[in-house]
Amino acid sequence: MVPSGMSLIGLVEHLGSAEHGWLCDTFGRDSEAVAFTDNGPDADGRIVPGKSAADVVAYYCRARTEADEVIYELDLDDVGTAWHGATVTLPWVLTRWWRSGVSCR
Image (cartoon, rainbow, N blue to C red; front, side, top):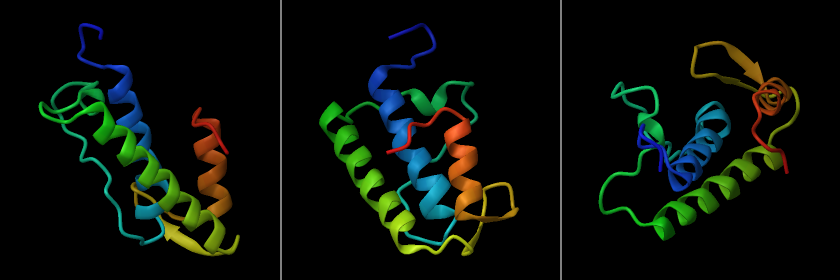
């Protein structure tokens, strides 16, 4: 752990939330996205007390599965609404997501 409180398991939780946010939320699917807070720049990478590493890994596995379902079920011209309000297509989301450094499968 670093002084900010960010940890590797916090990063895993952040990635799971990104899967939910970029794909499930954008295209109107149920989502377990972790709410980001204003408690510092790395607040979304801190794990709340009582949450185990196994809980976080299970969350990430669910997020990947649910995000994959969105990718497989949508047509390339289907649209959704991004977190910033823009109407976007699946290729737009995947391109921006990949360019931001999130690994693609």
